Structure formats: C-alpha cells, structure tokens
Amino acid sequence: MKSTKEERRQEIHKVIAQHKLHIIKLKTHKDWPRVAETYKRIAQSYIVTQEWDEALEALQRSCKIYEELNNKKELGSLYLAIGSIFYFKSLWKDSLKFHEKSLELKKELEDLAGIAKVYNNMGTVHARLGHWEEALKWFSLSLEIKENLEDLAGKVVTYNNMALLFDLQGDWEKAHQFYNYSLQIQEDLGDLLGMGQIWWRKGLLYGEQKKYPEALELMERSLAVKRSLGYSHLEEDEALLASLKKRIGP
Image (cartoon, rainbow, N blue to C red; front, side, top):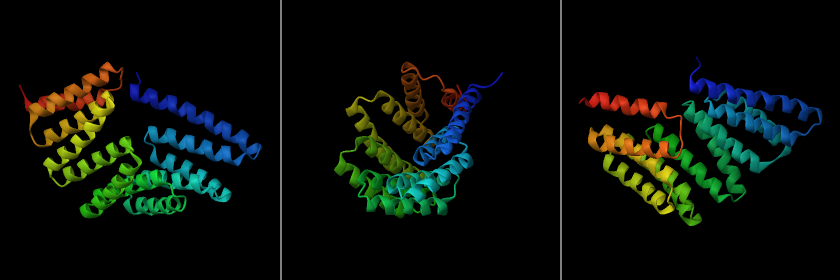
C-alpha cells in the first residue's frame, strides 16, 4: 500500500504530465509567453515534491524564454526562485549569485516588495554559512522595507528567520524574542494557523533548551490547532512529538 505522501507525489506528477502536453501544443502555436508560464507551473509542482533538479531545469527553461523576450519583471522573480532552489540544494555560492541577479533587476524596476524578499533570502544564505553579522544586516534591511510597506506577513517571515539565526548561535533568549514578535502579529491578525506554526517553532526551541514541559505544551497546542482546521497530513509532526515524549520518558 502506497504511503499518503507517495500518493500526493503521484497526483502532482499527473498534473506535471498534463502541463508538459500543454507545452507541446503551445510550442506549435509559438505562444512563448504561455510556454514560459507553464514551465514555471511545472517548477512549482516539482518544488512541492522537493525534486530540486527537475524544478531547476523547468525554471531555467522558463528563464531562457523570458530572457529572449526581455521580460525583466519575470526574470527578477525567476532568478529569485532559482536562488532559492540552490539554497535548498546547499549550493550557497550559486544561491547568492542568483539572488544578486534578482536584486539587480528588482532595484531597476523599483520593486520594493521584491527587494525585501531578496534581502531576506540573502540573509538566510549567510546564516547557513555562519556569517552572522552579514545575515543580520540583510534581515535588518528587509525588515526596514517591510515596515515601510506595512507588510505584516513579510515581517513574520523575517522575524522567524532572525529567530532561527539566533537559535543557530545558541542565543535562545533572542530567538524566543523574535518568535514572540511574530506571534504578536499573528495574534493581532487573528491568524490561528499562523499562531500554531509559531507555537511549534517555540516548542522545538524549548526542546533544544531541554525545557520539556514547555516544549510539549506548545507542540501539542500547535497540533490541536492544525487538526481543528482540518489539516490531515500531520504524520511527521506527530512522529516528532512522539519521539520527544519517548526521549523524556514517563
């Protein structure tokens, strides 16, 4: 019997196959903008299944078309996506290279929201490289733009990344501080799922600190919220929580 995860992967691959058939028809009519857009959709599907090489190939095919069309807006977004793929592949130098290409175009287009995203992503790459000060610089630049744009969802992303940065340094107090900034925004927005996600992150952090009662309370609260909202694919979270309980003992 196939696992639930495998079944989802197969369903996504059926969608990808349909996109590939559609591309054949679009190429017959030389509808290159729609061909490029369909390659993007294929890439997005592969990203869901975490098939990074296939996603990268689809993005590069889309890029080639948009480069020929000189569509700078699309290219800025595609370079950002390619930089993210290289991040997931732990190819830091390539990731920074494409984020810098994206940043150049987004600055040219005066796309402030896009610039903030690039700054945020560059911070995550430098964090993984252990370049703490450089990472904090990029996160701070991203946060400044998001504050000016009143981009609350964007601020949550950067606050969470800053929390992770301090976590990687072992500064748990500051990590909790930035998760609390995120949590406050989610509470103000009434975003129950968002609150649950922060509870989970804080629970993991408490686990690192060996503060197990606090970790269990927040992780169980997070799972309860996800179940109440109808989320069904929680096997990995449930397994992690069970592992923590086993480690703690009776």
